[in-house]
Image (cartoon, rainbow, N blue to C red; front, top):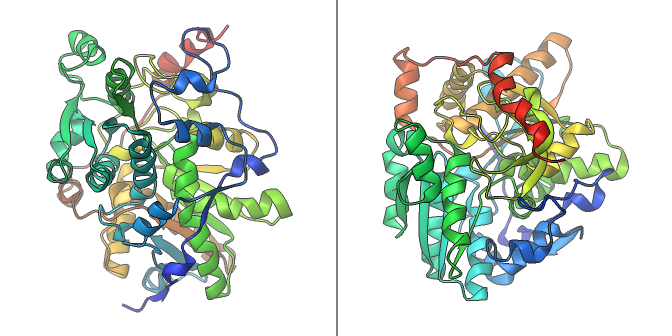
Length: 453
């Protein structure tokens, strides 16, 4: 198994995050207040987020400095390696060169720590004592639990119930770092109680878990809420991935023709792709950017660009995004981190303007790709990451069919060592694909036309 790694030193960790809004042709539309339906003021967000994060959320500055204390903590695992997947190339017999950025080496096993640490830092600096959040498969919850333990903050996590049951060890990770973890929907919030009253067996969704976590912060001035994807400031923090990868691709003597990330709300996808997309926006360089989303939750390919709530109950601002509707109940797929009804506003606008392509990946195809990657590269990928691998394999096969040498880069957003129950189901032949009809999608999408006058 021959692989080639491109390594950076601690001095190469970026000193600033990249904010792609500064270079966008069309800026994202403004978020709206959920009550007045008018453009949001920064003060409207103060009961929910730390002040510095609100500034970053609304910023149009190109570069935002990384605090030295956060950068020092990044040194625990960053820079992460860029690896040329020569084993995978050989198995596919492709002329393509395939590279991946390995974010699975972080202490929590995923890219999520890139944003968890600065979010905890800014809240601690403001004097906040306790945070709330939601988590799907548990990567974000684990990352924030670790970050809160570093900064001495309390944490309450609402974990999507299906993942709470499927992934008990990730729940244990959060608890080990001191977080309180609850299966969502729960009876701890009005939002959760309402949903359970309608559907006692509800398996949960990220939208529901967000409603519960936001509710806890809105009604307690001592608590702030944090989010692991979707929002602009989260995407901003994740650009350390692509900024490092830029330098590493230079070391490899190549520039990617295709950059791929799995897609749930947009954090790891944006982190790997936006620094490369900058070259297209600013200099017109040809590059294809691909969001690999699950076929069972196809918000970018089959959703509608509308204002919609970021949560199920309607406590969050209305965001202009591609969405399947805040009432959409995704299938209980194992890629729990991708089970979200909407796309972030930045990615949505870029997709609308044809700067971002999308591929829908069926669940079984993703696990086939994950197993091949494990056999050829040694790392068992997270179920979320297998979608990016499947898309990279598609691109490599196409390069072979066309007889062209293509350079493909994807983000390995995390390892799958706490997701082996999912692989058990795949290997036993009990895994299935989920198909959505147009009628299924219309049920939750068509109501959006009436949200904003």
